[in-house]
Image (cartoon, rainbow, N blue to C red; front, side, top):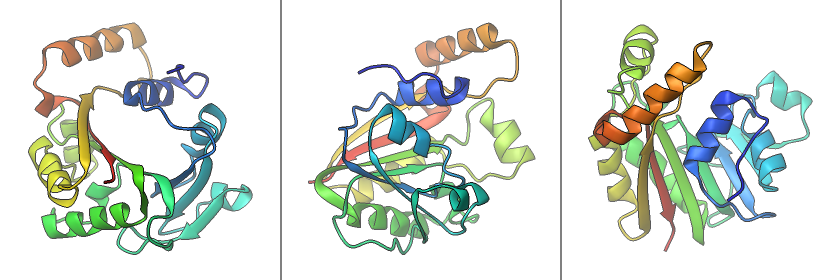
Length: 207
């Protein structure tokens, strides 16, 4: 697929490593879209019909012409089998600070509900024990990221009837010394166990 470029170092790296072939003109739901920072990529780079939901309406969303509704991952305000793609990036770990698997599972089931048969649910979560994420995001900022094993467990439980493809990669936003950090990423992806790479990804084709 063609490379994503022009959206900033982190976004370009992230979507190129995600390496998913979206079909132009299809509908995508961004669950927990925040200010809509990924909307531009979905629209301009992939030509998708963008929809977003979140628990609040960000000021950037208010100023845009994006299709947006207030909603939660537990209660997505769309009918069953509505979207070709359902995208969730670093949302699951925010829905329960106590890391209760039953609540993660409830949220994942709602993602599956609104996805069409033959469509894709794409779930991306930061890995709790990544060497950069753990001290910065988990300890300093209090993000209860999921461990690699927990991520796989809950995805396999909810999407047991579907075609699941897991992938794991390293991607971060770097304020300086980019060549050094890019070398770090390359070494991590080549030599590190998957349980330490920064992103856990599940790409699920709904049966």
